[in-house]
Image (cartoon, rainbow, N blue to C red; front, side, top):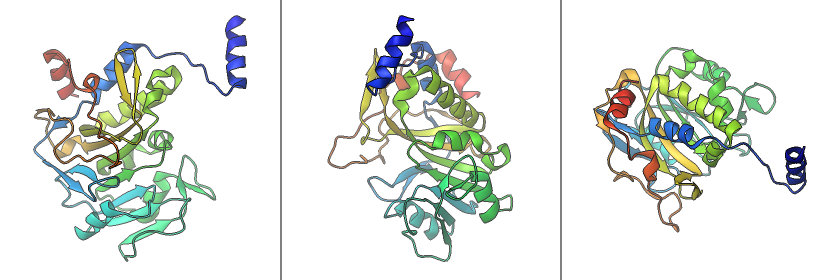
Length: 274
């Protein structure tokens, strides 16, 4: 009874009280997000700050990029267009695409789990724009809506993405037991098909520390489909030499040690075989 009273009182004050995720479960997920190296060197596409991303140098043959979440500039997509890769943009909150090109489309919708007036699913969007079976690239920055969208996409369309670049938001919710289930389910689904090849905190969000675990509130993470490369070990440089601070007026954030340190040899072997 006292617990229910405390929870109700907290809600009235605008405070959410949640069950905490056990630290060992959080650490296990962090170990799985430790980036590996492959035969494809990382290159930077786009500007030096926010809006530029690191991807494996394995772009030849990718037919199109899907980019939900539109800013007033699109240097990443412009770099892809320069390499002959079509780009499809979507965002309900902006009026038009920042790119004027016959090889770039724009739909004024949010990406969601249903298709209706203001929303479109990734599946419907792909089927409308790229209905064949060619390889694609996904670059997603949709302020937390990535979690349901990535759970909702079909296995067939997920497997079409050779490279996925994500801005992951609300990562501090890893410590919330119920949110952890969703985050863990999304990452588990992705890790079945993809390697993590880059992981860099977005310094706009800062860090949250729980016990000895530091969690960046936002992450830039790049994945490579497993059939496109072979893991040759773990990355050792954090940040990567091509990384830049998203907010140039703030210090960059290196990936905290809990995300890449203390992995025993047996655990490394297990991770590389996944």
